[in-house]
Length: 191
Image (cartoon, rainbow, N blue to C red):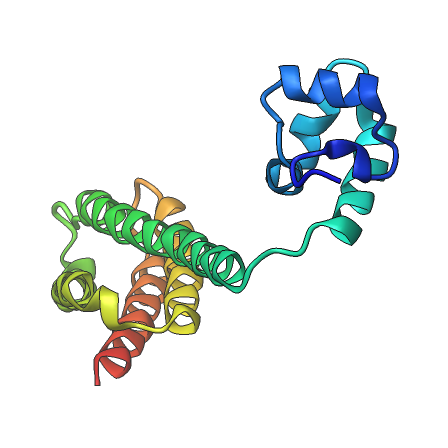
């Protein structure tokens, strides 16, 4: 039995081995590593036999400790990357929404909203400062905290997106409370 003889795997005969070799799958290791979808696309294999072959190759091929460690390391990197990108995206959207909300909520000629607007403006400024600090601190945050920040930022974004053209007391208060809550969470994260 040769090391690269694919016929040792159940459901692979000489003809199927030739088709696999023509597709670039020449070793049992490559057969083990190829995704099921790609294997199913190989001529004359199909979905059914791809599943059977993938199940059978597990019985024949035993990955080395280095391969297992490398696979686990790659999986960890894949999990971290989308969370970091999601956090960056949320920070960018939040800054944009804060700017838009600021424009929409300006109490042009309405003194009764001036105090609420000033409060909103102050809280927005604090939040922007904390977001800037979060951007610098981001690498040291655990994934659980990042996910929590993303979830809370998403909720705040939804609230700010629905800010209407005409300012209302309820809008100012709701928005200020949510900004304050999110800002406190960011402050607690940094400490």
